Image (cartoon, rainbow, N blue to C red; front, side):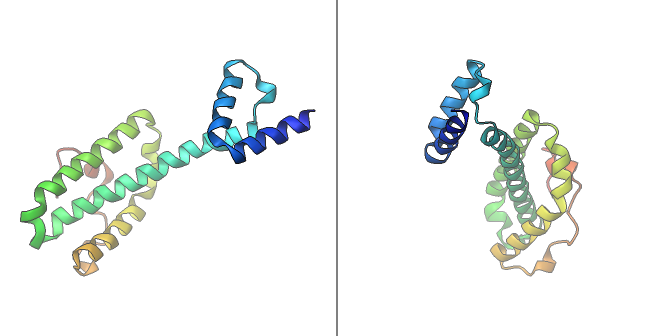
Length: 153
């Protein structure tokens, strides 16, 4: 009987994710812990953290891209300055909201600043058609400055 319940939960997870979520919530609300699909629930909870990290990484990359454009793409600066500054504000605010909800992620940001910077540098070089050496090899500012709403390059 127990094996069949576990099999059915796993099948539901694989065949109708939304229904699996609803059923899992119902079981948790009813304190029916013995019938919860713990393996998939644990995986999903861990996935939430991975998702937030990926989102934060993406936002940081986009923020750095726009800071690099603003600081180094001289031929487009006059025409695009307002757009780039607006995007910088947008990405900083989104990062700030994520960090407000999960302050421990700030340590994660510091860990992947260098990788995000290098990826952003490559992307901006391609978008701008400027040589990669146009953009400094080292990050243009420390993380705190990059996130500072009052700082622009």
